Image 1 (cartoon, rainbow over the protein chains, first blue to last red):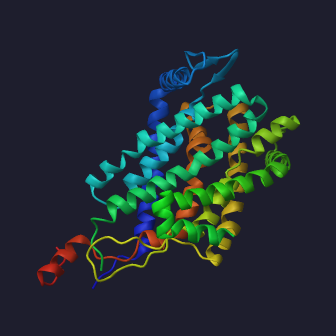
Image 2: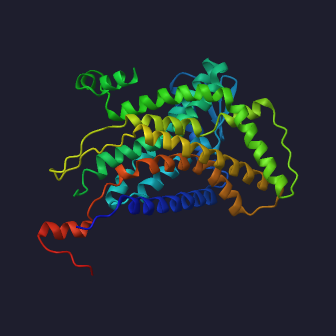
Image 3: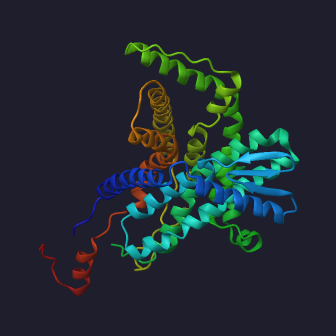
Length: 167
Length: 206
């Protein structure tokens, strides 16, 4: 009985993962450039949700203005890097195209989590400004990796492994 | 204390009462480690980035280019605190508490595999991973300097964005994957061979 060793599969997946990371990154920044559209869109959504929460917030370009303060939504704040890595993982993992397509549902989830991070950071900036820097870098660190890993593991458990044959 | 907490989280009673599943357990464990490591790291963040700058300066001196940095204390701290070493370390430590269900060979349906990392693997992950992440940060700093001192192509500028953005997420993920790949990719038959086996025939290579 022939068995695919895990190392061989893993090396193939890693090579494809790195290729996809670079390609998606290159294509995105070649097309998006300064990322004005995604940044402005994110700023608009953040301002909208802050308004729902009762704050006097509005978006001007890539800036969110509220209560005399302003936040500049830079490219990193759109969650694009986590999304690129997540998409690369999904498409590099050896499974059917159907499973990979289902995995793409992680993209809006990651974006929603990014919005939550931005909104909570803005709220800290308004109500506890002395903690803003700490909160901002702390949440950035958490969101950087853990949600990519978690979504990958959930997708792998709930979608891929349910359908794949075992020895 | 953490083991007791996780035993409670994984118990059937807590699942019904608190609704905490294995994913939440992993996430909560990660938050605990991440918070502790972040607080410890905040004490050495400035020194860490100062070392990065010293190594970068030494590299350029070696190749005959004079480079000097005059960072403020705030700049050193703000750059050092953004290191991906603390979240990576938290990920590795939290992976010890990933789900540990047995694999059922009798059933043809999916089972949750054990992804839990043992003590030796965690140590290996930290001893190998942290220097790699440090070296990556040095390379990134060197690439920033080249961006400033030489006229660069658009391709190089996007490559630096790739290093500073995507790789900051991808590299810790890859290092974590290097420790868990044997569990993530268990040995299995290729689909066409399995199909032939199911049909009772011998698989012949085309």
